[in-house]
Image (tube, rainbow, N blue to C red; front, side, top):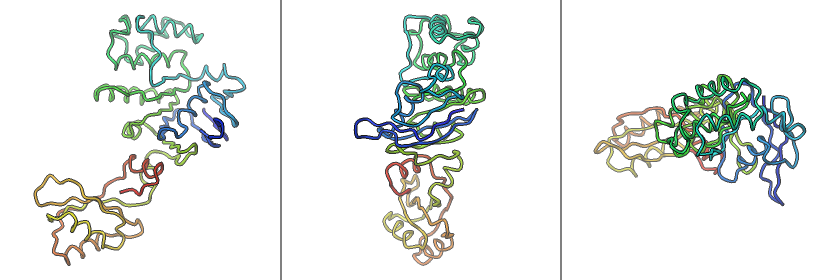
Length: 314
């Protein structure tokens, strides 16, 4: 559905995007992540036709965005971080305006009714947009992206500024849209990507540093194992020092415990070694009772930090 090959964009002597290549298949929901200045927004602006590229190709559903921009853009629905709304229009008036602007071919009334249904706007479609909550305005922004039934949806920070209930609603909506559309989701809210996306692409300093199905990225990126160790010990420094002395333990970070006299420590370990017997023996030697030992999954935040800042996962 989307094919990007050797895409490069320079501004003066700075390479904002540096020879990146990736494809997105029909029906995938892909999280496109990167720190500020990584080239993420530049790539998205090239994909949507707002920027030209210095070199490379970007093809949307068979149409090259540079050679045939009109046909390529007909396949794209875009929700920028600030939805392009006309606040004095009703929802229906605004969507009719977008319909005409895009030159959509579907029967207008039925299509707008369908878009409102998909975006959860059925009960507010006659209301003036400025009188809607931020959550509903965001839904209107999503609805305008759906007008014309584009094959590809690109959402930039779709839940920014929403309350927790609204965030859950928009996440559910995006997952449902993924059943009929290819979706690229750009956001700084990492748990959102983890909850919604089938696949994650991380860009840093203009280059792709990770491209993997979400589950594989979370399990395979570092190879390290991560455990939470609960000890009957009042001295955090003693607990950390003892655990670090065990072969295969690469890092130890204390966590605040809710129990008096208990130390909780998160450790990362060499995946080639089973450190659990060694931990047990060392704690017996130091007369420190072991209360609990559980495996802890690495979070997307751990992985993102490691790939973009070069910090060791803790």
